[in-house]
Length: 139
Image (cartoon, rainbow, N blue to C red; front, side, top):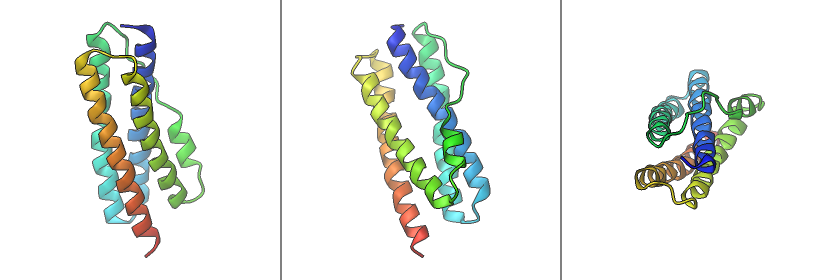
């Protein structure tokens, strides 16, 4: 596997692990059932993405990172739940942009197909998070 491709896929892998971790914490901390359900759904998606990314990296001769990104700390140190949700939405957008960088390297077809789906899910989740945040915090 190309070292640049492996590095970017591992960066995405670490980000997905961080996303999973932060969503779990935030789901436990909210009493709002709609937000809890939203975060639980996103957590399941992140777990699936981690598994697929690890498999794709191995399949193409790379070594999956064992690290978790620093996004967890960035989100959880924010003073309000609303700020945390806003940063979470920005994180979803970051992943979608990072996927575009990986796609520019012309990865193998199965990697590209998965990444396109992943980017679309993250864009959808970003909009859904923003909409839920607006709805929740304007009530």
